[in-house]
Length: 333
Image (cartoon, rainbow, N blue to C red):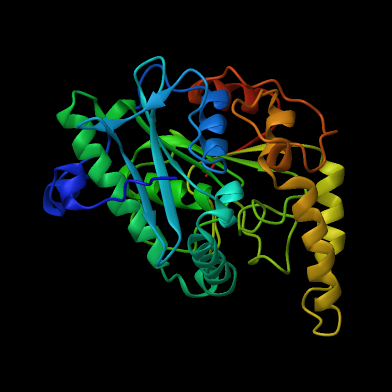
């Protein structure tokens, strides 16, 4: 696969200009946003080789798709244009899915970043370098997109797992709207550029990654101490919960003895089982009523595909928030 890496020459905008576009504070979200289906498909496409979500096309600069790969910290991203002429910046999750076979270096760096997220970020408030790299790329895409006639309100971010965390951080720092699928809370404490009312974290009950935060109750003591709507590592933006509360109870029982060194190895093994059961994007697609296209059986047919379906596939971000609130599935910051 030929990957067009980001640099000043490739995007045609200097870094100073890119960061000047960070005047997104207070920018209103577009009246019409991409749907849950479009954002999840964009996230999932990042796990497949050279994939473009159905109904979209690659965002280009001088005819070349704008993509990004940084093997130093594992940030990988693509940019897609929807049928509604809106831009989606999609960040890749850990291991890169099928891309692992062609870029194992990026996958290894993503794992290292994940370790930092779980062991250091929440405790210290340190911002992992990958977050800053994702922000630099997204900011440059905003500058390039504006030069091509896109408004800031029509640019969105998304990703799954580590990609969702990077999207969450970019949204926090820029005010861009979007959806992060199964991201952890953010242990970073910089001043947010917006309120987070236009960004949603979709978290599945029982998933050890999405629930690793201080604003969702269920994974303590493995996760930071629970504080309603806060704590040391809360999510940025709204939280929409998928799945079954019974699976969240299973997660709580699984990690209950995590503070006992003798029990910790067994806790980690059992938590890994829950990761395979509830974390993968095919699970979110099933539970949200989304049909993935493109899709890979190796990536998307794995996990617990028997959860309750909350039909949000065709919802825009405001519609998702409204429907989740009515269904008791919304956690607000």
